[in-house]
Image 1 (cartoon, helix red, strand yellow):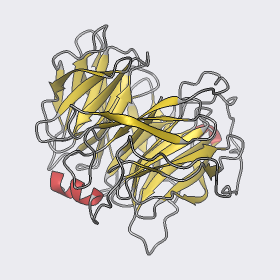
Image 2 (cartoon, helix red, strand yellow):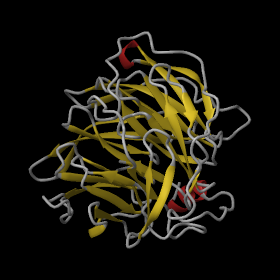
Image 3 (cartoon, one colour):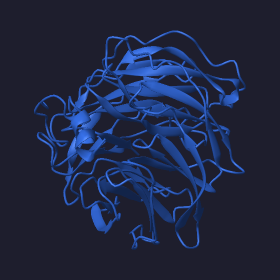
Image 4 (cartoon, one colour):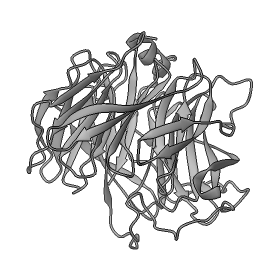
Length: 397
C-alpha cells in the first residue's frame, strides 16, 4: 500500500463541486425518523455524562464553533480550514469563512484548554500547524519529519502534540508552549516492517501510554511517553490478522477495553487493554453492518462518554453502525445501521456535550449531523447535510 493508494480510496469517483465553508448553510429543523432497536447494554454502565470529557454536560445555549478539514490539493477541494458554527440544539450549521495558510489540513484536534487547534498538512513534506482560536491566527508550522501526516492528538497534559505520518510510517512528538505554539520536534519513531503506514496516534486513558495504529503492517504499537523529554519508547506490540488494515482505535471510558476499526477486511475488533503494561490483546468483534454486496472500508469508531454505545463510520456502505456496549466494555452488540446521508464518511465526532454526532463525507463534500439519543443509542438526522468541499474532518467545539 502506498500514499497514492490512500488518496485513491478517497477520490475513487469524481468529486462534485461544493460550496465553500462560508457558502450556503445546511437547512435546519427537519429530521428523519430515528433508527430503533436495542437499548443500553447489559453490563454495568456509568451515569450519563454527556460529552467526551466525562463531566456533566450543561444545557447547550448559543452557536458553537465548528472547524472543517479538507484537501486543498484535491480536485474540488477547499482553500483552507473551513470555519463554521452550529446550533447545539438543532444541529444546524452556518458557514462563516475559511482560514487559509495551512495546506491539506485533513485532520484537526483541539488543545485541552480549548484555545488552540492543531492541523496536519498531509503532504510529502509533512507538517503540523497551530491555530489560535481567539483571533484565527496561525501560530506557525513544524515539520513532522515524515510524509503525509494524517492524524494528530494532544496529550491530556497539554504539553505534547502527537502525530502519525502515513506515507513514511512514523510517529512524531512536538512540544506545546504556554501560548499554544509548537516547538521543534523532540521525538520521531519509524515503524519497522515492509511499507509501514501509521494512521493514528492516541493516548490511553491511563495517560502513561501512547498507542499508534499502523495500517500497513497490521500492528498497534504501544509507547511510553517521557513527559520531560518528549520522546517515545516502545513497550508492547499487538498484531491484527494479516491484511486487516487497522485504521482507528478508541477506548472505552473504563480504560480496560478498546475498539479497533479495520479498514481493509471490513471488521471491528474488541481489544483487552492492560493499563499497567500498555499491552493490547486484539480479539474478535461484531459485524460492521455492511451488506455483503458492498465493498466497505470502516473509518472511525467512537464510544459515548458513559460507555453505553459505540458508533462506526462505514465508507462504501455509507452508513453509521450502532452498537450497544456490554459486559463493562468487553462486548459490542450490533443494533443496526443508519444511512449517513452522504458519500464516504471519512470521520465522525461528537459535540462536547455528546448530544450531536457529526459525519464528514469526503466524496459528497458534505457534513451530516445527527441527534444522539443517549437512552437508546438512536440517531436522528438533524436537517440537511451542510456543503463543505472534500469534507474529511469535522471538529465541533
